[in-house]
Image (tube, rainbow, N blue to C red):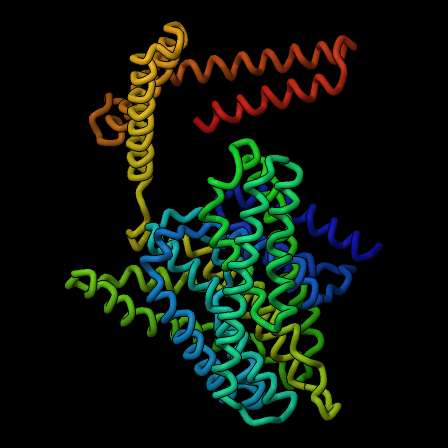
Length: 528
């Protein structure tokens, strides 16, 4: 009961924090970590212990899957080469640099320093996706940041297993075996993830039951993760591959109604899991600090040195890589803004914390790993530093860099697409009218609706191109007025529906069905 109460308290805390985060326009993960730290420092707060099994099996799969579904397959194919370089080369470089710095300035042995480097070497897909949702980054940059964080975990996991084997079993590092293990982890995870995606796609094509579709969508990431782990491959890679494959084909697997439901359900699940896990990161740090010995009381300096090393190595790696990519693209003058944004977007989060918590407590000989508490504290504190410092300032860095897409660009793109859609609809309507397959009254009604949408889209294009009226607002089209009036009428109908129910004139079943119909229409009008 205590654990259930703790989870409920975290959900309430996360909901309050997320509400203020949206109002203040600041990233919710960063504010959640700060809130967790504040709550953990309050007198009487129970000590929070995070289980790596809970994070790895319960929390990670749906969050990774949701992040992978957001990836654009078209953009991913354009950046797969730099993603591969970052997912392997940068991870190795970061692990080596952190291991060297930690071995030199901290009491950690070189074996445990290598473990720390392997744990913190990869960026975290959950944190990167959560922080990047509100940033208007160019598509290629956004996909590069997300894809790197999703595909670098196999490299980091292999490094971690090698380093943990050296530390726990006192064995020599077998890099040849490590290369084979990397191929097995990444390749096996890819095959299993693709197979799971194929089976799920076949099932979803043959069902239109919203409840069954929702259950399948929720179970898919867990199935991909568990099957891959049972086959001793990378569960993270399997979930990512399944998410990328199904995310690119989602529009062809379900209808609009089911997609709306899946979006709402998954949005709720992701919000709850992200909120709880980011709050736990802040809550866990004070208890981990209390477990340190007196000799490790300067851990804040160690943590800042490690975080600074990660940022420096990332920047030194991205600058030449960005120069090469830009030169191949025909750009002669180096643009420093992209590598700076990519560097600052490389936050750590849930995955490194789960890896650090899975470090064994004792060696194979039965001796205690006395350095494990310091590794936990340094991992959690570096995660906190990156989420708080980089998270709170990332939007400002993107804005100052000048690479963010302007709101007018997005509006022009959307308005142009609306014109094209309305034009295609008009063309099809004229074809049907010539065939005389549709009554004239229906054709006239559809033509008026399409003309209103086309007029509205052209008004938006005119306004965003700077040729609108002096007030800077587009003139209200008939379509816009229609939507506003229809939504007002829907509100009146909803009130009348409630009156009928209150007066016992209709049943609850009828009320729910009619209310859902009104809600769907209202949502469609609002989205338009």
